[in-house]
Length: 267
Image 1 (spheres, rainbow, N blue to C red):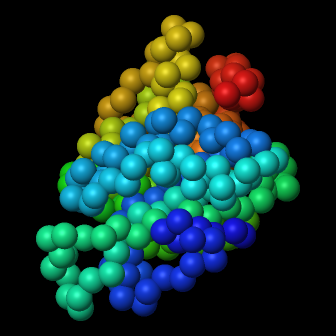
Image 2 (image 1 turned 60 degrees about the vertical axis):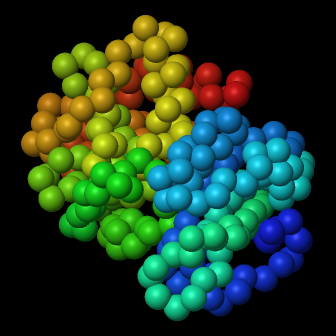
């Protein structure tokens, strides 16, 4: 791993940084190929929206683009970009004049990415995801719900877990967005009260619109999923994976998933 902190390679993080103390910040996970970041404009748009909603100063995007490229300049890799509110006094109250901390880290592309079984078996997690419209959609640093839910996947029942909210509505995977084939069209959960509005989720909806494939965004009660003929999970690194087994029931691989995966390879 190579890390750049506030522009300095190998820099350190102050223990008083609010990202460490309170999870006060945002992050993006970006797929890289030879210094080019896939869907970077969309990542930076979401980061800017998150910064606006958390009242964080947004760094200059040209600076961020340069540091992302520095973190992984060649070959295939993954860059994680973190913004925090920076160093602050003890206590929750944020400074009215924060100095944002930037952390940009580069990682080698997972060698087993194609053989990983993230999309093979999807089960329902016991851990529920909270509803909070103030944080819904953005990729903030508070991920303990996902940590607890992801721990449930380390068994023989499922490779990825579906997280529900307190109403028993489907929201997302532990590390992915989800799409369900229902009544002949694709459906994906709303992100207005919970979840992360993923860049790859946006990519699938963009591709589908160009192809004339219907994708509806709405509440999805878990009870409806017994009627789903196909399912898809997406994130920035895996791209798109079809679900082959949901809660012990075999599903088909929809041809749209195959076509979308082929389109992703051109991006």
